[in-house]
Length: 244
Image (cartoon, rainbow, N blue to C red; front, side, top):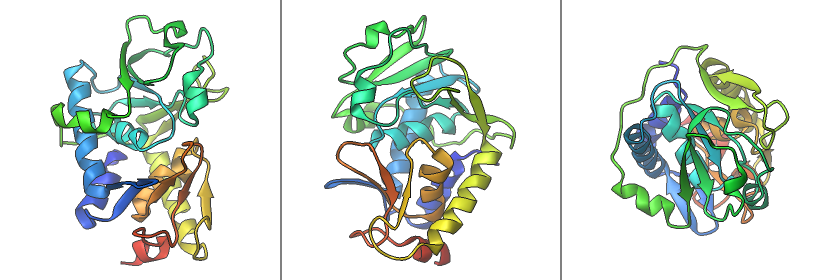
């Protein structure tokens, strides 16, 4: 099975209590991330999202993003990272931006211009401050749908996350290989906070690699940057995670 969601399941089984995502005082362990993503998977299925459907994430790159990301992947959906970087970008989608065939789109709770986005028949789910707590009331889908190496995992718009046109489809197999390369590079980084930083739009060089390495994804207060944590309290170094 090459579904990228198995990276999270395997990591959660190996070190469930290890921090996976950190934003200020908020910490999600690998067990938390696995559990919450299973709720997202169950909720998506309840909303009629099926294998191969597209799920948009019009949210800043914050703790909710990896939960939504892996939740969509669990059921074999294709993730559309529409506005994953900053709250300001999430709150100001370009007029006429398209959902690109997404069956469901998660939107930041403060996206005032959401009505300007051409959603057609797309279901829109707001993601507010209490969203992660609310997921406990959603059904769960723990199973991970099998995906082939060449099946698409994410769809990146050609002109960037805010662009309206279809772009490059990145497969489960390719992203897994890229994550393995990035994880090895992380292991080679010297110790110290900020030693390894990755752009939050680069899935294979950020979130996937962090999960594969078993490190902690640190998100800054603005949700604008991510980094593999080296030396932050409670977060193991990449070298330790890959050699344990």
